[in-house]
Every structure is written in structure tokens, then in C-alpha cells.
Amino acid sequence: AMVKLGKGVSQDARDFVDSFREMAQKNDASKKLRMREWNHCDFNANGLISLAECDLWVKEVLISKCVKGEGERIWKRYRRSYLHAFNRAKNVSEGNEIEGMKTATTDDYVDKKRVPYHDCISL
Image 1 (cartoon, rainbow, N blue to C red):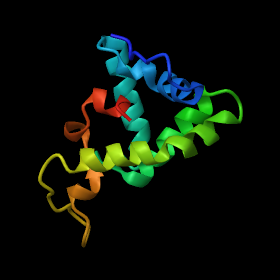
Image 2 (image 1 turned 45 degrees about the horizontal axis):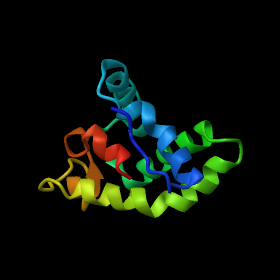
Image 3 (image 1 turned 30 degrees about the vertical axis):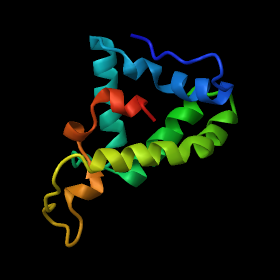
């Protein structure tokens, strides 16, 4: 199903959603794309995504998909909303210590179990 937007939605919001629309579908192609993008977002390949990794990934996607020069502006405009979504996702399950880290726990990151694909788009 397509992500439906109402008539009063701004063009910026449409551009934001359109940048991630392909990943929101319930089909094999979208699943492969989500897996590819997860691996791209998980820059250090530890199976966890930090807030910084998520932020950089969203910015890169918007810059690559939006009209030249608009991606960064839209990233700044909606940054608070997806940071909020990230923080909600990381609090889904109990945190566990991360081997090799003195103070960080899994509560500081998201993993695939904490981020169902539809939550990625509910920003």
C-alpha cells in the first residue's frame, strides 16, 4: 500500500515521504531495498545503528533524492521528527551491554528487531 498524504500536506512533506516511499512497500523489492539501506546505514557493520548513523543516512537519502539543494533544507526541517522516531524505537526493548563498550548499551542504538520497516516511514 502506498503512503497516503492528505490534501493539506506541504510540498516539503511530500518530498520527504517520496524520498523513502520505495522502502515502505510490502513486497520483496522493498524488503531488499530496506536490507540494503540498513547495511548502508550501519556504517561500522556492528548490527546496531546509532543516532549519528541514522541522522547521516537520512541526510544522504534526502540530498540524493530531492531537487538539487533542497535535500539538506528538508533534512533540517524534519530532523526533529525522525530523531524523535529513533528515540522511540531505541526504547522498545530492554537494553543490554555491548561487548567492548564501557558505558553504552543497546538502549543507545536501534537494531533490526526494534525498527519495523513501517516505523522508518512514520517519521
